[in-house]
Image (tube, rainbow, N blue to C red; front, top):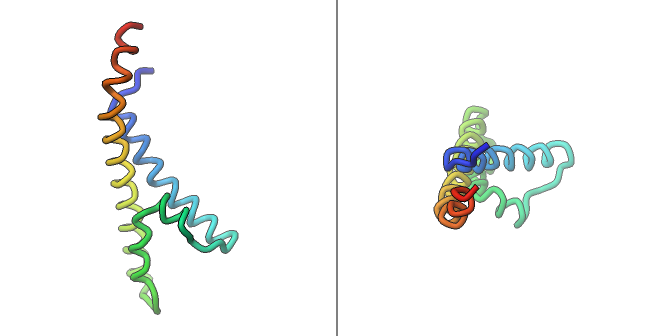
Length: 97
């Protein structure tokens, strides 16, 4: 299977969705609070600071949706930048074979 830019970027976007899901599951099941590593892996989680206090359920759902969607977008941008850097390096090897 040939690696394309679309596959590469979609893979990064999927990682941007899976990382918050795993972190939230870890928090829910093991009551492990967020720290520096989580902020590096899920940089848009700072948006969740708006939930301090007694927010309504709709506000909670909307803020989590925004934080996760922003993370997918950030990971996709990282994937795009990575593709732009790696494609010229990988292209000569794929054209030969």
